[in-house]
Length: 224
Image 1 (cartoon, rainbow, N blue to C red):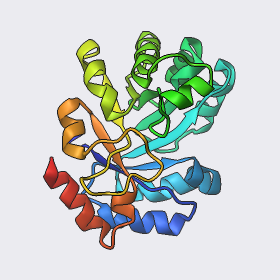
Image 2: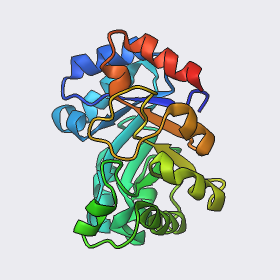
Image 3: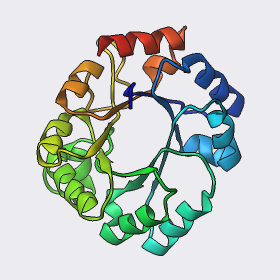
Image 4: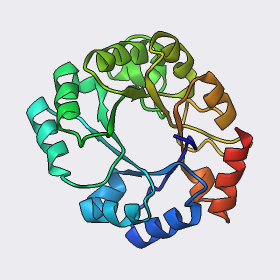
């Protein structure tokens, strides 16, 4: 990826998503579309946003039994995506099934610990240890299942890069210095995250909520 910044377009409005994609075209490495957009617009909506040739990170976080996940990934058909997410917590068989069903050339990455969660949140679900402990466990599963990499916060990426040098690390929770944290709990600046070993950075509201999203994207890229 020549530009590691991916803009998270979190909206159900297809026209708004297309307009945002047009405003940041050439200024980011790609567009991230998630469940909110997909549930409202489906495969046709993804294709509409991708019309300009922008790489698409399809963040659907599949998590079900292996057969169901494989069927869901196959059901995407010709939907254009370059990166696809599954929950690493679904286990090795599920991740292998997703990998085998994905479109040729697409990267499949395992979501480890959401950046909105901290140690207390993990404990409430019965997971003992720090987010870093859980990321390490799930990263080992993802690597063993043949995935391309993982999604983790910038706080864990340096340790993961050290043990998985060829891994593809997607890092959300990116906030330029001075930006509001919002509902994120484990955040870092773009430059810090890249220095720690991120492959791509997922940036949402600091770009999409700016008066000039294109200029905001430029500023983040230049900070790297």
